[in-house]
Image 1 (cartoon, rainbow, N blue to C red):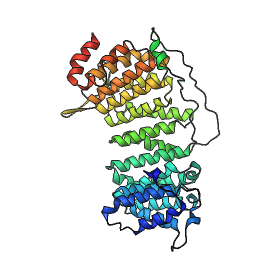
Image 2 (cartoon, rainbow, N blue to C red):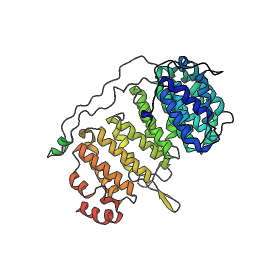
Image 3 (cartoon, rainbow, N blue to C red):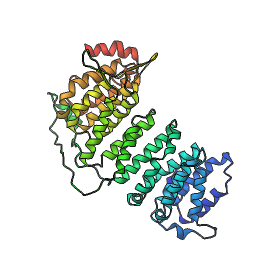
Image 4 (cartoon, helix red, strand yellow):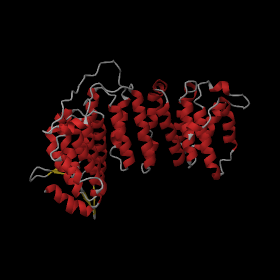
Length: 442
């Protein structure tokens, strides 16, 4: 819709005047206010100095009046709040405005968050900051990191909203984007690269082997960049987010871990991977009789978040092949994760996340890397795809198995199995348990 709106210089002041003339108390005008906000967010991207466009008829500069109106609508509960946050981000990301208005806005946000801002204003402020750190150039944001934003991320007021999933998610998202600003936007040279892939060649080999694919493990060049100590604070917040009780927070933290690790030097990235794998070990017990692991005391939230993060790292080639030996046992245990809690069991989300990990492994690694684990992966995925009680987990496991068959080409009887255990046939539990399982076993 926005791309069809006009964006002439002459549109700026009339649209803003129309927005200012509307009564904020009239809830029936929320559509008009929202359209005005997103229209202004487009107009303010014009490549001219906005101060020159100001006619000067107002008592205060046009930019300040626009920011004040946006701040007022950050307190609302409707779509106007989203539009106001977007307009603030567009204004503060401009080269001619950021030096004068960015830091004062963040200081105002800190003052409001630490005083009497309600939950709606808090949400609006965090949304606007997330969009600002997404849209603004890195060189504009760098001066605001150490002294302005890091204190905001560690403010004690977040403890007041410990039960608000949206605010925790926005904090995690803002933390992720601040962490990305600390690091240059480059892809790590040390990451694992599988190289070119051909599905036709994978499936065409009679012996179940694939063509040899060259992968490189290049040591990252020293660029003498100092990594800020505050990056440890960023990583700690994200690792804590992987333990969160809400899925949206864990998913945001997992993506943040993957994106930040992609820009880290190899030594620091290995530390992140090590800390991530330690999450699987939390509260695990060892049975004295047979020495097996007892997972009855572990947190399903932690396992889910850690599995998502492992998948994000593997998908980007950041989980190096030498780490698979210690990672794979946890993922295989996660495929069978099921904890008794009172009169019910939990763990479907963990099993689903581990299917995502297996799917990511298929896309990320060459067949010779996965070869030692093929038997275990295939057996576990087949068992989950036909015997799991949750339909989404059965289908996720089937998708992961199909991806491995196509990408790797070394899974035994792969084509025959995926023809029987497809997306639709596994939707019926009786059919999966009694018919498909029997056909595969036969």
